[in-house]
Image (cartoon, rainbow, N blue to C red; front, top):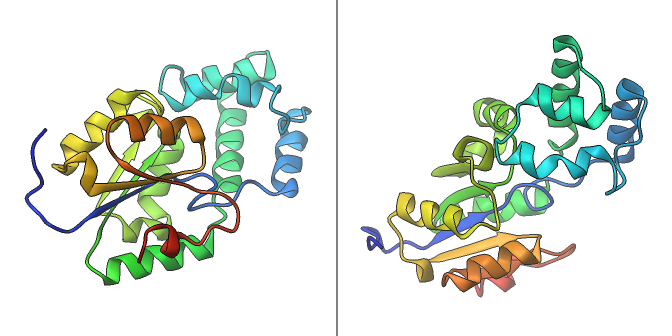
Length: 201
């Protein structure tokens, strides 16, 4: 591992349910109107095929065709992609306040999200929270996904940081466990958490 050239700590944030809130009922209703299916339950095709989509193993057209169990037109794929990006775009303002505070202290910020490539590219172009981050890492671009240790190793290499210099924040225990096994400092994000206190600041 290449030691960091900077003494400033790194804070590595997940996106969904950390920087963003979970989709609202209205968001799921919009997807249901577009597809005729209730996609919110964990047993729905939306979730069953999501890991492959997030990891870049299947295209958007392949993903939505699997979700709907039928071939999907390009126009419908575009509509569903737009609805999906919209439903995950609701910012957690408390987390944004913490990002702002961390930047003011000189900390370095990076994002590591399991996110499809199309959504990731759209957010990277125009989402307001992008301004806080020095580095952005998306599973759909890397074709690696949490909790695979390889994605954390890649991030550490790109940050030129030792594991102990990086604090990782995620809402999924499996991802936290994987990061912790590599020596990263970890914070499990749960509803109502005081991140500043969790960081010891």
